[in-house]
Length: 232
Image (cartoon, rainbow, N blue to C red; front, side, top):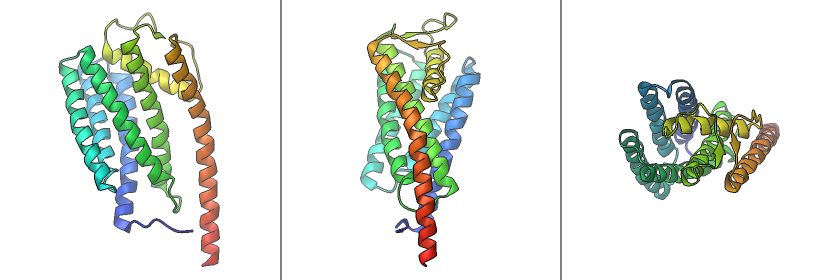
């Protein structure tokens, strides 16, 4: 098997970036879902998301042209996110969510390329595979937020949800996204609009297929690595 062509220090740098992404994603979920009702919690969630953006930039350094695009996008996105925190508005929220979607989709493609390339199975790459799963949940959560901004009645939300609170809406739709991704489906939040329902079906399908693909990939890499060692 042909191993990774990157120098060892570059490979360790990229793999450490995958681990960093996983840590910041977990921190973001914990803070967003448990502390976002408080002002400090909202700031901490924003800081965690900002660290995800910065770490995402680090993972794109392999391709210079892509890193330039991602850095530019990250700078604008960071500015919009912090501006939205202090001067919330529908237009600003649409722009912020739209750019977040583009940035995270680009990051998802980069992480997939790093995780699923040839090479030995390492702890960093396994953590990167988990990060991909979390990225899928966040991407769909942002798409749900965009749909909710465009079509306010697209989701049937809990009655206790504060009206007009964007942070509460983000928290609830992030929760809904991961419940859908894992196909748990408690039924406390439901999609009503046809576009939202279509996204829900696609996310549930991705949530079922991705673990099976990762398991098959890990087994095949382990077998190929064992065969490669036996021929040396």
